[in-house]
Amino acid sequence: MSTLNKDIEAVANLAKEFGPAFEGINPEYAARMRAQNRFKTGLDIAKYTADIMRRDMAEYDADSAQYTQSLGCWHGFIGQQKLIAIKKHFGTTKKRYLYLSGWMIAALRSEFGPLPDQSMHEKTSVPALIEELYTFLRQADARELGGLFRQLDAARAAGDKAAEAEVQAKIDNFETHVVPIIADIDAGFGNEEATYLLAKKMIEAGACAIQIENQVSDEKQCGHQDGKVTVPHADFLAKIRAVRYAFLELGVDNGIIVARTDSLGAGLTKQIAVTNEPGDLGDLYNSFLDGDYIDSAEDIANGDVVVKANGKLLKPKRLASGLFQFKKGSGEDRVVLDCITSLQNGADLLWIETEKPHVGQIAAMVNRIREVVPNAKLVYNNSPSFNWTLNFRQQVFDAMVEAGKDVSAYDRANLMSVDYDNSELAIEADNRIRTFQADAAREAGIFHHLITLPTYHTAALSTDNLAKEYFGAAGMLGYVEGVQRKEIRQGIACVKHQNMAGSDMGDDHKEYFSGDAALKASGKDNTMNQF
Image 1: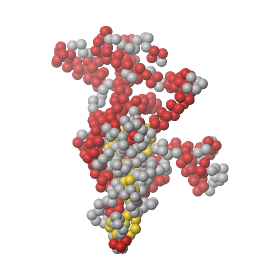
Image 2 (image 1 turned 180 degrees about the horizontal axis):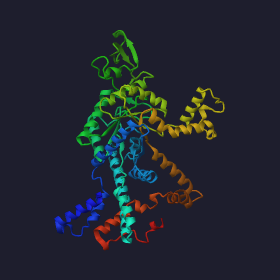
Image 3 (image 1 turned 180 degrees about the vertical axis):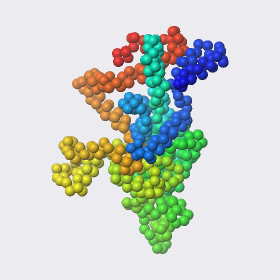
Image 4 (image 1 turned 90 degrees about the vertical axis):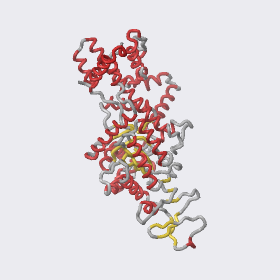
């Protein structure tokens, strides 16, 4: 018996038990509403999606071709439309997630207006967006199931048993739009207690995977900007444990923690690490400090700080800001230490923030990490901060030089030029961009590929095109040709925007509640019938 039929039977039994209290209640209608609201709480979602991610991680360990993907979202509607599009084009949501970007919350969701990615936005907006995303995904379930229920009623009314069986099978095998969200908690918005409190709110809203970075909270910078300041490992591990305790307290025992290191591009630290003996984590962190070894107190000036590192007295270089510098060229070594330490102390996945999308660079670090933790795997930011065209054309140019090929037709500094678009070099670069995710999954341990800010850019691009046409000579044709006609021909569900906003579901409910007396909006004169 299907879940829907079981629920129909269960509600019918309740009606028998409670008698008049269920007068006028149709058991099938009640069962349909239950089916349209499968997930009752955010914790239900977090537990369900954590199971999905754990299964996907195991499948990736067995076969690196089984990597996963997501796109960043800044509004519930955007996330909903992505999943509707995924189901439409691929028939399944498997291995497709959503990413919640702190950058986009700062830029688009703060009451202060647009802000840089420096954790200055309201931290409550993070769980609020998670809840909003899942509200829209659950609505997508309800809308699609509502359409199937209408088809079922129509088949029954027509006495078409074959059509009825076909629709019933679709209902019984319905795949939810609810998928895992990897949610950005930045650097925790404070100390480890603040991290724990915010993580709880995020998990209660539905997050099964929380990404946290090793920057200091009060000096936090975007991963693709200068001035990043990292914290000693002990501080970061305390926050990782805080997130794990939040998962355990709420019963999401297999929740996922993504430990992000910004050390590759971070040349500064605010703190000298506490160390108790040579070779401990604090000592290793301090060993990367840039400075001068000294022999006596005569070498110490007023206000200087001196630490013992590598068995010697080190006077770290301190900037006017009070921050300390790391040695130039130490970034990769610090990344490897960060990653190994995080995986050995509670993290499930890694995030290495890089300055360019280069499979070889990522693989070199991951191979070193895997010498200690063999199943180490990454979440990787396929960032719009990278100029993908220029980066890959330069990579191909350099490979051609190394192979001894003639590159005299190209100017390496100007490879972005449209003049090169149809060249052998540009075609090869585009092929490498096309296969980047599969290549990096196979060679560099990347389990999950995401784009942090895609809809920020697509919204800007489409709005620019619409404004140019609509306010220009095309007038209304600018909208019709550039938007509506494409929606109709590509089968975009939103062309029926009343339906997308829930009008048909509302009409169904009115019929459930009021029967023939229901005043409904979807009659023959509804303009949505034109579509």
